[in-house]
Length: 140
Image 1 (spheres, rainbow, N blue to C red):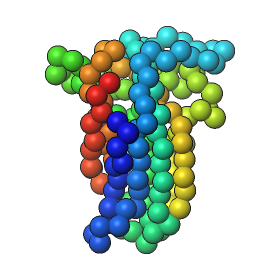
Image 2 (cartoon, rainbow, N blue to C red):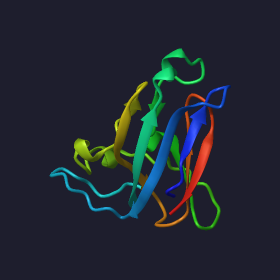
Image 3 (cartoon, helix red, strand yellow):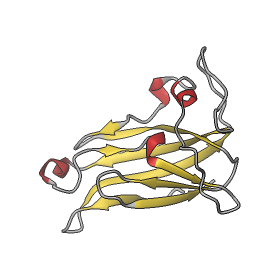
């Protein structure tokens, strides 16, 4: 957490950089029609992203996506959850203005929360990039 991560092109230039600034377990929902988490616990990652304009020229990645669909949770017992980190409940928990945009294009900067619905209040979260298959782990 707090460390720069990213995707580089063949020349070593960053096409995307991102930082998970903070992870909050059991974040309270603020929306009127919020429902309890389906899997047990809402976990919010505070993320900052910057993409290079050179993504336009890249065959490697066309846009950057980080959402509940791109995460997998591993419990403190080392067992990977069968449930995805996404749920309908994540869609109605927080204001859209607080959330990281789902798709971030070339030459953009974005900050926001990625809301997950996971079974355990602690463990490992694995983010896997759709375009490259690269993955990063975050303890929570």
